[in-house]
Length: 165
Image 1: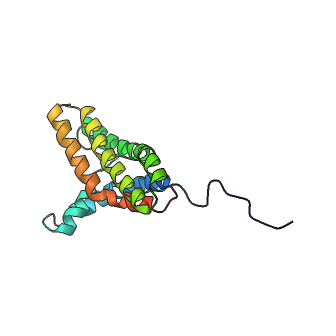
Image 2 (image 1 turned 60 degrees about the vertical axis):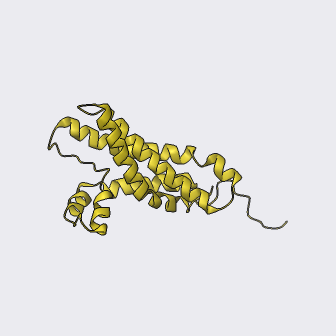
Image 3 (image 1 turned 180 degrees about the vertical axis):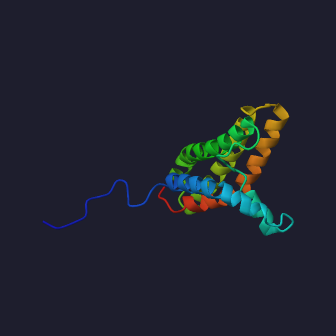
């Protein structure tokens, strides 16, 4: 009787969607934290690096009660929705594509696109649920969210490369 390893069904590493969702959680938790937001606010917004560091703080969340309660609710809701929708889109988007197309490019672009969609929808929904919901404000918020997702989604796409399809 030969000693062999039993076949693995799950593998040693997580799925591409799982690693991407973990990266989205970490990105929102770290770059949206009050400490990072305060630090990034001190950078020069007229330089590319400073502007990008401030952009990464877009899904800001906080626990203090400064300002209106509705604003606090919307800011935290946006961050929570971003993580939830990113995980949802990461699981839904690449399933059929990765099965048909071999290569890591599909995982990368699917992860990136999922984060763009999640950012736009999270911002749009949070604006509608805010203290003063208006269609124009929600559309503008969705555009700002999609911009954030487009410029930071490559991080999630790269993290998606670390998992199996």
